[in-house]
Structure formats: structure tokens, C-alpha cells
Length: 243
Image (tube, rainbow, N blue to C red; front, top):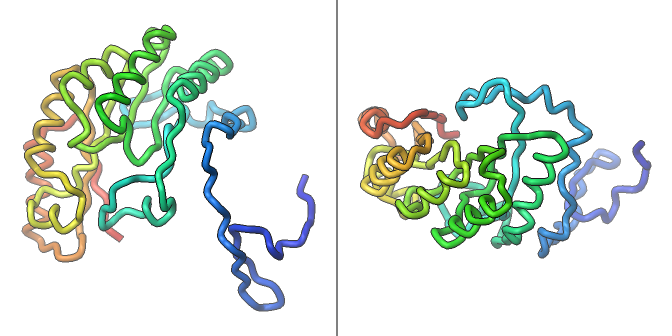
């Protein structure tokens, strides 16, 4: 049920009252993400969410999970640093505990990370992979994630594969070096080539995420992106129109 209380002074919301727009003060960020309870997935009919064609999953339930909020990068096109002005991390043991809980309770076999990028680096990725294996979850689940092309190494990818990584989505963005540099992303086309090659070599599916129509783009630069996507030979590709 909904309790009808006054919205005046309630942090983090805006509303209309007597024809006027009221902006309340911002709500402070939660410092300790591990203090939050697990999501209340029991309130949803999870069988409504069983087809995920862009992830190579069909007829299986999948749940999202996060290991962090925020992003330390300041990519020109992204809202992460506007929504969260600082990065906060969960304890990886808690993340694995959440995955194990929903695997036990709901028999969920697919989990996807909704972080800005995960793993955060080679060390955290290998730690997470070892925790998954130590808990025997690598025999029960598959998981997918999105990360940067400059965050993976052959050693990390091998560990992720052993721990059940199913697909990695890479924000490659564009196939034109000049446009890529303007995005302040801090990656290169060569790093993208290496990341996709090593991901496929490790036996993990690779998805390339691209954008078309960014400020400063021309028909040629857009065609460069399409050509580069073909050259990379990803297992899946996704093109978004910049808005």
C-alpha cells in the first residue's frame, strides 16, 4: 500500500504543487553498498524475462547484478559521472553471495553485470573468478559483463572463462581514430582489436557496442565504424544512434 505523506522536504525528488515545480535537495549517495539488501526479485514473475537475443541467451531466466556504482572515467557521451559523482565498490564476497543466493532460491543460471565496467582491473577480475570457482558456482552458472577494451588481459580472460564467463560486451564506440579521441574515452582502435582477439581466443563470446552520428561525425566516419566492426569479427554487434 502507499502511505500518503507530504513530499515537501523529501530528498532527491521534484514534483508539482499548486502549479509550481518544487525541487527538493539532492539525496546523498549511499556510502556502503553492502548495507543494502538483495533485490526483491520474488516480487517479479521471472519467467517473463527469458529471451535475451543480444546476449546469446534464449529460454533461460537471467538476473542483473552490480559490483559497483559510478565510474572513474569521464567519457564525453556518458552519464555515469553525472549520475554518480564518485565510485563506490561492493565487497566481491558479497557479490558472489548474492549470485549464490539467487541460484539456490530461484535456480537462476545466468547473471549479468550492470556496472559501468566489470572487472575493474586484472586483480579484481581474477579475485572474483577465484571466488566463483571456490564456491562451485562455475559448474552451475554463466555470467556476462561489459568492460573496457583496455581492462582485459589474456591471464584475466582465461580466469573469467574458467569461472563461467559467457559473453563480454565491449564499448568500442567508433571505428574512426579521430572521433574516438574526441570522446575522451582513453582507448585506441588497436586495443579494441587485441581485446576482441584475446576474448575469442579464451573461448568467450565477444560483443561490440558502437555508436553512429556523434557530434563531428560524417558519413565517412560512420562508414569507418561499420567497416571496423566487420574487421573485428565480433560474435555480436550493437549499433546505437547518438542522441
